Image (cartoon, rainbow, N blue to C red; front, top):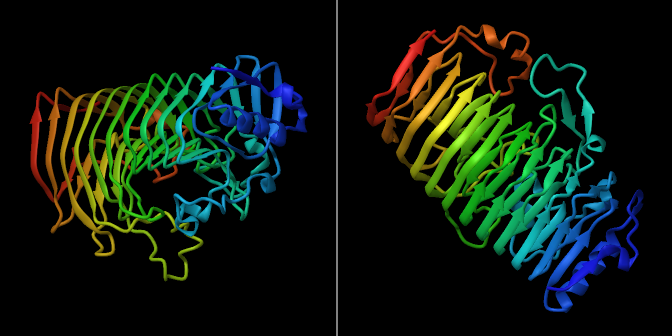
Length: 422
């Protein structure tokens, strides 16, 4: 594989010179040559949005920083995109630092750093008694960092990402055969919408050996097909050997009117200082014709009845979660379309915090076939959270006297599972 060093195309690693054109030229030249490695090394390279091509590897050496531009105009909408319907994307936003559409055999690798320059896209909240200390700036909203759509055979390995601009770190949208390994995601927990790895409508995805700290959910598994030409499932996703810290959910599955999410395994995870450990939530969200839809961010609503099935969670440690260790809920309103949530397996879950799990289906759509085996849930008095309650974003801590919230659940099985009030 031939190397294409960006300095040969005029890139300057002084952290000030804008290198978008030079780096893009190197990527384009590698593609024209039939593939190659674009090497970033020896400096801090300021850049706007870059577009990847098939058979190109973007390689960041350990002394390299790819620094996102502080100018929102450097992250334009990808109006030429053909794989997605732009007006139907969450937050109506396709702008990002690194974009790839319908590419094959692409990679982002190395021990270098992607710095999103996020401090330029948020402002301090002066009236914030709890939750995120910052809010994102007004429209156009901050860009995502890496956005891949319609791609296959993708490798993302070794890279550190930091200072995300209140936009998702990695957005994997309708992709196949993706491997993400050895990543450090170091977002500021006080910034909103700093999701870690957001996997949507994708198949055969592996996430392993990653350290993720972020303000929003660390790992998201969804099947929102609203921006695609046809409905696509999320299936055969493996997440293993990761450390997770967040204001929100360590792992979250589903959202309003997602489609099919099935056949996924999540194992060997350490969750510390999260709001919720594992969340499977189908909440009420604004309809598109409701007046408050735009202000609610309601572009992130799917178009199908949700089916979540055959999901395994095993060997997971949770400590100091502020809210529920496991929270499964279905909104009772008809607008939230549900096929089923069923066949969930929890093995070797050990959690310590102020609440026990909750499982709340709805009368006509109970949560079905839930299995707990070799699990321990220790409920504290909340004293360990003193000084940390301002960090709660989903709900303020309230004392929970019930041992476990269970409503509209069919076939709940527990084997060697303990609930201990400390």
